[in-house]
Length: 110
Image (tube, rainbow, N blue to C red; front, side, top):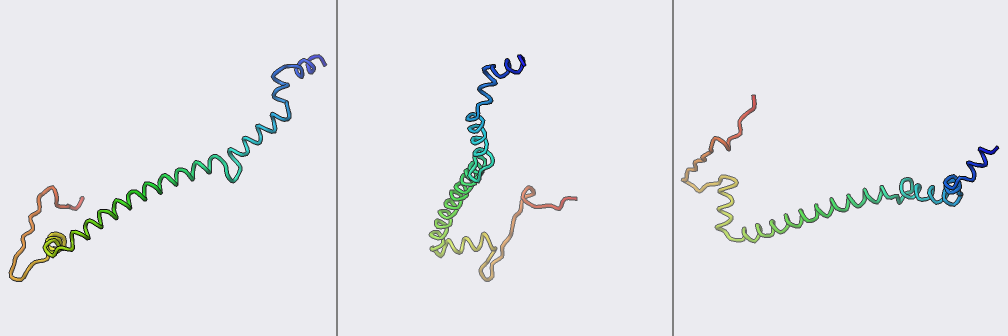
């Protein structure tokens, strides 16, 4: 009996066995990990928001580059230059020679 009463009177045991402390710890644990609005879900959502914002920046940069390209293509000389470089188009009675360097030629891996 003395041992049990000695344990019950121990300062730390009294603090740990306090029902309000137990309920508070349980509540905090529940809110952090198991609730539908838990800390872990908020962290996941924040990470998703960061990724989407990065995608947004990349797409905005791409839109700006495309607008610059469209403005550039309003000139007929630029259209001709683009067609010749990208699609290898040519005028009548004109020959085009493609020069490929060794390091730019794709080879089949054996």
